[in-house]
Every structure is written in structure tokens, then in C-alpha cells.
Image (cartoon, rainbow, N blue to C red; front, side, top):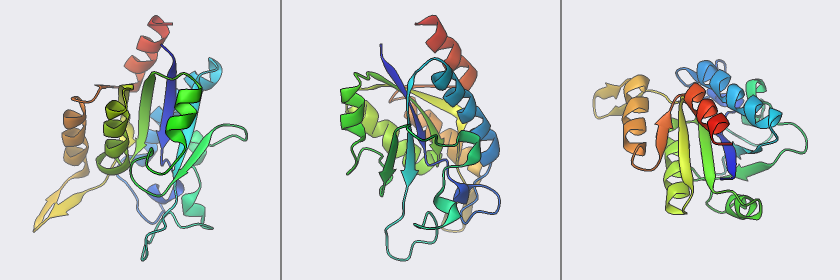
Length: 185
């Protein structure tokens, strides 16, 4: 089964000093780097997804700022596929689906940021489009959310979304995904 890696929005604004710092961004990016290195070493198809904010009043991922840049831990190399998106779902109004179809991709390994937003939207869309999905639980990060006067800690947000996304694919740690891919070659 032909597999591709999607690295979603692992961009500078989500890291310390960025405009929308996430909890655990560096640890998640280190795990994403493990996946990326695996795909690079074995010639696996991988796509960097980069969010560019076009919504009026946006405060991060702005064109022309360092915050929009793919983080150094998973740096985008010249010649590697890059999809720029403007919505949480990486398939919406992009050429991602065409790229995957042209390469005969049937299964996606997904990692990135934020678990509760762009990762969630892309995983659900990928499953709806017929892809088998493997989500790297430890290669994703998010932030605290609030509802009314309640603050939901990032760890709870992350785990709640991972629990929900088990209905759309396999959710497992990076090392298990790498082992699974190696065993199914």
C-alpha cells in the first residue's frame, strides 16, 4: 500500500517566541522529524502543509513574517512537495488530493499542529476521501481552550481529539507507526 506523510502546519508561530505558542510544540516536532527522516531515508512521499492566514484580523501565519516559515526541526527542503492552505482542512481549495492521487497514495501518516483544528479537519477529510489514516499522537500539539469560564488544558484537548479521531483511523505513537510501516513493506 503506497503511503505518504503529511506534516501539517509545523510553523514557527506555534513555537516559543511565536504568536500562537502551543503546549508541547517542540516535543511534537521532534517526533514529526523522526517520521520525516524515515520517509526521506526510504524515498517515501511526504508533503509539507503550510498555513497562510488570509482572514481579516489574523494575528499569526501572516505572509512575509518568520512565523509562517516551516520550523527548522522539520525544515522543508527545496524540491519537496509543499501545499499552502488557507483553511484548516488541507484538502480544501488546494491541490493536495490531486498530488496524492497522481502518486497512487492510499494511506496517509499525519502529524502536525493544532490537534483540535487543522489536524482534526484534515484527518476527517482524508478518511472521508477514502484514505487509510495513521495519526501520530505524539507528533501533534495543541493549546489550552476555553468555554465560558472553564479552561480546558491542552493535554485534555489533545487527548479528547485523539480519542475522537480513532473513529477515522489508527492513532498511535510515532515509534509504532515506523515499526508498522517497516513490517508492511
